[in-house]
Image 1 (cartoon, rainbow, N blue to C red):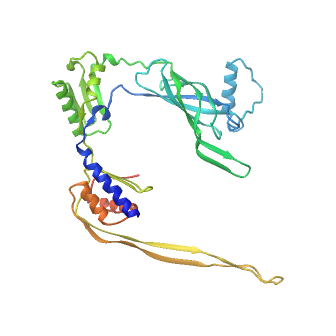
Image 2 (cartoon, rainbow, N blue to C red):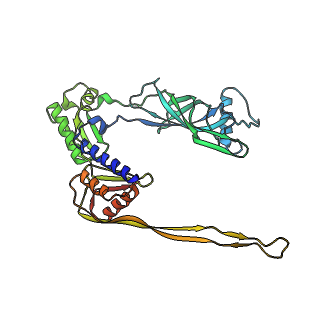
Image 3 (cartoon, helix red, strand yellow):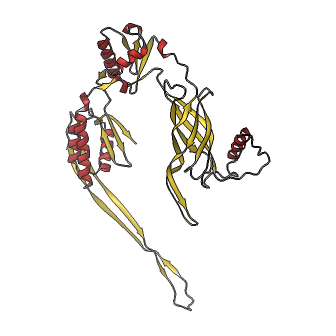
Length: 369
């Protein structure tokens, strides 16, 4: 059943791959526009209102320190007090400031415990400044934490599902400072390909020049295309990108085989080819089982209890594939048909592909995860 399922999955992938090879993609899905990027923000704060699942103050003294500082800013003097609350947790707060984010816009924030708190369920993040890489405050986060797990414990056992010590605050951070970036004054704009490729970059250049009817774009290398804003004869870079990003091109990609040994997943690109090769697959399974027996003396005798070892060892030869020939293939469907003809399970197919690659007969980039 596993072999049949593997054959169907890989054949389905082959049928799917046959179409998108000639599909066109929008430029906005292939490149990143220079300057149009987000900025990472980081802050350190407190989550309060936990149901006894917060930090232990003895193990996390930094939690007590920030709690005391917060209360003192609110006019509560706690100097010299012995605070031992169990409903407070120190957390790191992260967020991404989107491009062109204006003051007052709300963005999502992620919260993660850094002490020994066991859960953030039901907690509320106290107002936390979020700093950028330059040390300036760009946003402030606050709100109820939505933790992504659950935990429960008794006197002799406990159970945890998911990660209750991390959560999110949807739209929990408000932008308080904008990034200085004069996008409207740009004269040249670089388009950075997410997957650098000379052929794809050349097609993007040709498609943009054909759209404007004049040479306004130039390929610098496999990952960069430069756009001359002035040569487009349009009023602003925003109008230019609004027109450029929806132009469609046919991207090119390297032949690649990606396998995941843990799940037995195999994904192959449409350009994968193999040379003529012969394959034989099989293996041995060694099983050793220990079943010791305990021999006890009769009651009131002077004998001793003796443990008698009992070991069962056997070698089983698995039914494998005899010597089979895979002809030189010219398409992905040929590769898949040849591999499915061997009748092996996904793990065996991964081993075969790895061996074919080692033999130099697999003409593709082979990635193992």
